[in-house]
Length: 386
Image (cartoon, rainbow, N blue to C red; front, side, top):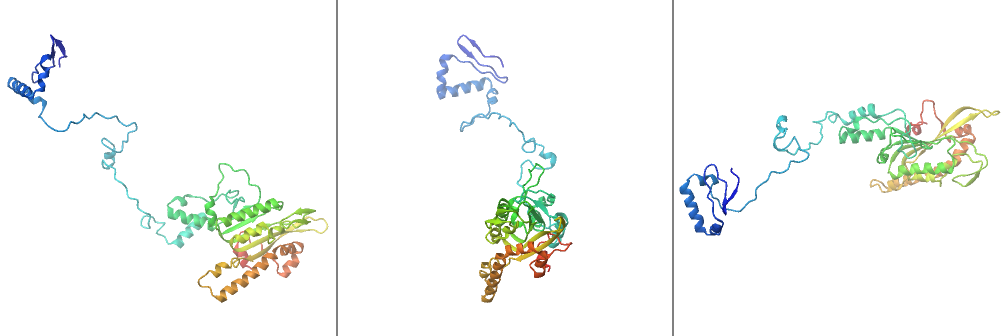
């Protein structure tokens, strides 16, 4: 089109390729407000050039709408959705459809199609360990053998739950009552939510950690299991007692030449109070009694002596609340609870008698000696064997 020019007070408008557009004086512009003027001008233009008015389209009436401008492209373009995307290359439609989550089932998983008892055998090959998993007194810091983690826990939610339950229920956790070494980025830690799955635990007390500080730490370790509502099949405590020299502060109070670790099993001590809070079947106490020569005092061997206490009747209220309980069963439970209470109260004198003369204690049946093939991690099996 030709540029717009000013000529003698008239406004010259550009012309279209199909027709001529007239020019008007500024003095006559106000006449276009009259409808009759509009119709006259339209008739005159249509007679002079019948095709020119058709270039402007058909006359329409209606609401005025704004001109749509081209929008800005997004900064991060999704090439797999929308117009011009790559979705057609992959055989998908232009619009994204919501995918339905299909729950896991034996039809979709061959492992879930196997009977549960066979799955447990598979878990046994992958997750069980013949040796205990060594942790700190907090039951979270793995110190020794690394826990046997593998991808089985991440297959799906159901298999993960089954594998985790098997892992923590069928392995023995050994807590070393000693200072926890500084952990590194490579160390494994256990989540405290798994404490409720523990079934067999061992607390090993080194010979030098017998004082009140370690007594309280041992009590806190047992309290943590009780707070997690752990139902233990067995709790084994391993000690190596010695005779102290001089007066020492113990859970009983000030004692002269005490037998180390004997106060751990004092009925009113913090350690035994924590044990009575537990839901526990069997308490095993393994005493490593050193055999020394009479003249030189050198250690020539170690005898492992066992005290087993059946704690099934520790909480008699459970039997009384049972809907199937009757007068006879409640009476039997109370009698067994009284016997157990007496056994726990005499546990410290029994421990001291074994230390003083182990041969006499073996003859009187206060303890029994472990066989070579028996292990401290055997748990309930130790109490079952006579």
